[in-house]
Image (tube, rainbow over all chains, first blue to last red; front, side):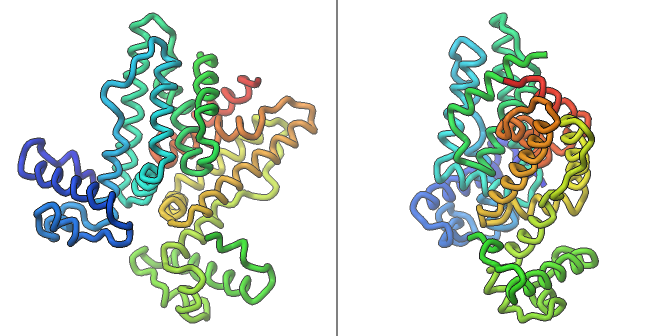
Length: 186
Length: 186
């Protein structure tokens, strides 16, 4: 069940969401994972625990929702002057974030969530980012592979290595994935 | 904590594991997920619930362990005469299995597991399978990319699409991933 989409921006619902998300982030910074509880989050956010249970169902789903926010890409990624450079700049930043302890936790939270819509939104973030970088390249007059090829050639191995083999989620490999995808243009 | 590695084959421990795994498989076939409990599994396997808690910790980890078994590839994958054919034959079977309801559940169980070693074993399965197919190609006198390239070019987009965008986990896309990886040989 997609939760975010049902929230009107600016309404009471959005304010509750923001307060609860912020409470989770603040508590995560100072509390060991197994001491993070719905009542503590509710207290810090100034809402009742039942508000949280009603909207998110349980702690895992709430934490996954907050973690998904962390994975949302910057709306305006760095413009380096070339598609290869833009992909490398974004990818290095993403790898740095996702190989950190909070990043690995965020990735795990989203994967462990029973809400399949959350993974789909992760996918949409990547799709929209690749679309932005591709458009920018075309405007510059560069050639660019399709969004699907950028996803399969760059985001897929990045994500696969982050999830299954984090030691190979390196900036050197990123460079090879980008080069392979851009030279192998159909 | 990797559980399997610690089990001596043939010993009492291995027999308990086999009985418990089989009980989970049998119960999964006839029981809705939320009625699957440790006491029911223990009863069917002829062990005490505390045996299960001691070895697996909780129901999620037990179910993830059983699901990982389901993802272990065939030791002797089909030999079609070419590397492209072998990859396609294996990949089609894997996609069919993993887009099924039990396959999607298995994938989710492994991803949701707190045991990172389980995902790593998933990765090792793929690595060993690609190694087998690559060796076979070299013996035939075919050229073949490195195992790392086969993983990044074929297994990564398959797994990425299965997890994030199952509608694109198709045999047609599989064919494109294989062709792109084999023609783009360094």
